[in-house]
Amino acid sequence: MDTVYIHGLAVETTIGIFDWERTIKQKVVLDLEMAVDIRASAANEDIDRTVSYKDVSDCIMDFIAKSEFLLVETMAEEVAALVLQTFPVPFVRLKLGKPGAVPEAKDVGVMIERGTKPA
Image (tube, rainbow, N blue to C red; front, side, top):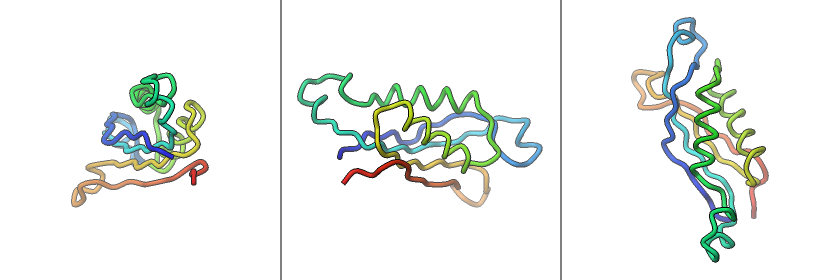
């Protein structure tokens, strides 16, 4: 199986458990890998036979921008579920970072894999 990926997708949203975090927007950054068989689209140069990273990016950015979460874990689960339900992909690997959450670290967050990983 091939991979369509999006790396470094940045979105401003309300996220965090502290009261002050609920009053501001913070940046989250996503890296997403989706299992996709690209052979049919490559053979015919047909965008409709693959997964459009622009469509996936727009969907995720819209969802996150309109949402509020306490935990990055919850956001990661919901984004992965959204991608699996909306696009024809059997498997998603997602890294969700919250840069600036720990001043001494460049980034913190979670990495998850959901769906059925193709052989």
